[in-house]
Structures are given as structure tokens and as C-alpha cells.
Amino acid sequence: MTQIIERMPMNGDDAPEPHVPLLTSLPRAAHSTEVPTSSNFTMAQAINCALHDAMAADERVLVFGEDVAKLGGVFRVTEGLAETFGDQRCFDTPLAESGIIGIAIGMAIRGFVPVPEIQFDGFAAPAFDQLVSHLAKYRMRTRGDVDMPITIRIPSFGGIGAVEHHSESTESYWLHTAGLKVVVPSTPSDAYWLLRQAIVSRDPVIYMEPKRRYWVREAVDTNAPALPIGRAAVRRIGADVTVVTYGSLVATALSAADLAEQHGWSLEVIDLRSLNPLDFDTVADSVRKTGRAVMMHEGPRTLGFGAELAARIQEELFYDLEAPVLRATGFDTPYPPARLEKLWLPGPDRLLDCVERAMAQP
Image 1 (spheres, rainbow, N blue to C red):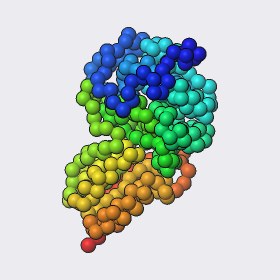
Image 2: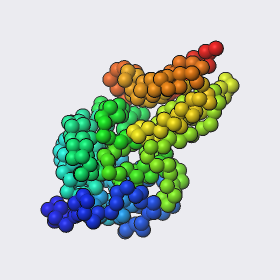
Image 3: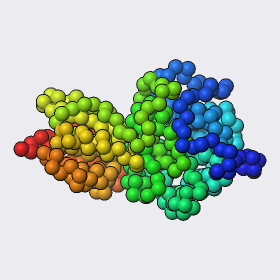
Image 4: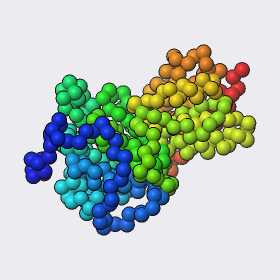
């Protein structure tokens, strides 16, 4: 990497202003693998497109990690990037997550915009010290003089029948670490735009990709930005209970909302999209309307993100509530073997049990 390290601008030099979102896709270079020519993308293709467009727009953007170049990643999300941009901008690393994040921090200091991949959520543990002790603290440690424009892609959560350490919900670790932004797309469109916006952020972003949504397909407009980081989306309007969730469970909540209609219950589904910064205003507006709320996430119940949301709702919206804030979550056990994960993950039944309890309150 010596050649490009010497010629890339440092932070504060003539580098493009990182505050300004890149709102247009550049023409794609010749690609050795098939790239959709329409805007009908799977989430995996939308992420690939976002990486491609970001690399085309800014030569400082580098993609690296275990098997991301020659193989194109375990889920083929980075397929074709090395062929298009060369092995100095998309390259494989050793199997050493701490080294991957340490390299990214050093590159950011030298003026690069790294987008490293942690191959699976459970593999983030070896990089924990770099993420928490250094990446999250560097901008404050330098009083804002050194940016940390690093986006860490982490295929996350369960539902694909994977083996141990391949299906974890790690968001609470990163949310408890001040200095890290955390985003979780639930649709291909959000996957594209949240990644584009993350890459131009001056702060480090943990970009958690819900693995069981990789093959969901929808139309993606790469010229018209979706909501920015820090904004939630109301995916379904309802009157009786607010369901707050993110990632894969947005689809679960929408399915539950259809079933709830059979009981005469109207659910409003909030997709947080961005966990930090959090759009609490959208959540509060919904809870004031419905008077009831259920938090839903895949991770264990104790100290999960739903607990923080429930506490804040009850602190700030106590007199608007008609029932206690409830949680539909995973269990307080290690993630189970693949054959049992459907029993472990929260589904429509677990959510509707909470809805029924909330509606039973006078």
C-alpha cells in the first residue's frame, strides 16, 4: 500500500468535504460479474452497488476484509469490486479481525476512507478492543482534529441456520460505546442509502446487515436518497399499539400487524433504521397516538436495546401510556443450534402475545 499512502490527501487537505452526502450514482465501470442494469435489487446487490458507487465517487474509499476480493465475500456482497477497482482498493486480509480494524484506523489517520468487513457478527469479538478503545474514541481524543470516516460492515443477526458465532445480535455493545454510529437497514433501498451516507460520515459507523434479508428484492432508486441516518420510518400506520423494531424483524412486525387485524387490533410499525443517532421523536409521536408500545429485537432480553427504549418511553411519555411498555425479544441464553433458532427468535406469535397483554389493560 506504500504508493497510494504517499499520494492520498491527509485529513484537512484537499479531500472532498465529508459532510455532504453523495446523491448521484456515477456510471459503472466494466464489471467482470453480472450487475443488474435495472433498479430492482436484492439487498446484497444494493450493498454491492453502494460500495461500487462510493468507490467510483471517491478514490480514497477502500474495501477490505477476509475473502472480500477474490471470493467476493461469503455472501458475494463484494463480488466484482476487486476486478473493477484493482487489488489496491479491494483486497483480502489475514483472518485477524483486530488487525483489520487496526489497519482501518491507521488508514483513516492517513486520509483514507476505509470500509472493512467483519465476516460474521460473532467474529467482531476479537476486534472489540480496537473498536471500543480506539475507533470510538479517536475523534474526541484528538479534539476533533482527526476524523474517523470508517464504515464497518458486519453481516448480523440470525435466521439463516448458521453455526456457532455466525448469528449474533451485537448492537447493544456498540450502542453502549459512545462515539460509534449504528445503523441497520431493513430494505434494499435503505441498505443502499444508509451505506452511502455512512461512508461519507466523519464518524465511525457500525453498519449491521441483516443476513436473512440479503435476498429480499425491491426497486431501488440510486438517484433519490432515502431517509438520512438518524431518521426512523413509519412502515405501517396504526391506532392501537406502536411496535418499534429494526432489521429483519420489521418484516416480522408487518406480518404480525396483518394477523392482528383478525383480532381487531391496529398496529403501527416503526423501523428505527438508525439506532445511534436515534430518532426518538418519531417513536414518541407514535406512542402519544396509540398509548401502547412493544419493543422488538432479536438479541437477549436483558440489557437489550429494547430495555433502553422502554425506559426512555416510560420516563418521558409516562402520562401518555395506557399500558406498560413490553418487549418481544430473544432469550437470555447463548444463541442456539441452527435447528432451534426458529424457537429462539421472536416471531409474530411472541409479538402478538405482547400486543394482547397491552390491549388487555383498562
